[in-house]
Length: 125
Ligand code: BTN
Image 1: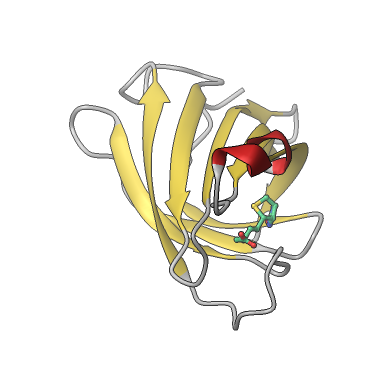
Image 2: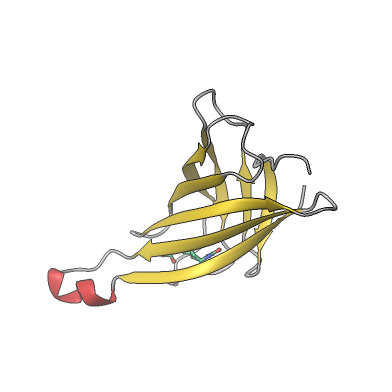
């Protein structure tokens, strides 16, 4: 089976789209995230992301990775961790888990500040 390539356009089960750009020499990458849903009523804006791949090069057949999305329309941060899997037919999927930390006004609200979930991305392009 060929190695998984993170670069490209991906979509998850919510209809969110993300573009991952070419890997840097050190296994870091950047991209953009267009979420289909939001916890706020504010207008959704395409937001940048920064990630790392492990192992860093193209050696890993089914590498793990992590990335952070810096939302441009909310005081929240989401981190994703995941792994890319390739099946016999060469179809790639990104199996991920995420944490969303919302900005809350005071420490009394910290108990409700973190959401958690899982997400599966398939390649669009
Ligand atoms: C916010 O509402 O605070 C910012 C947008 C959060 C979107 C979340 S991140 C996890 C989940 N997966 C998505 O594709 N969108 C939501």
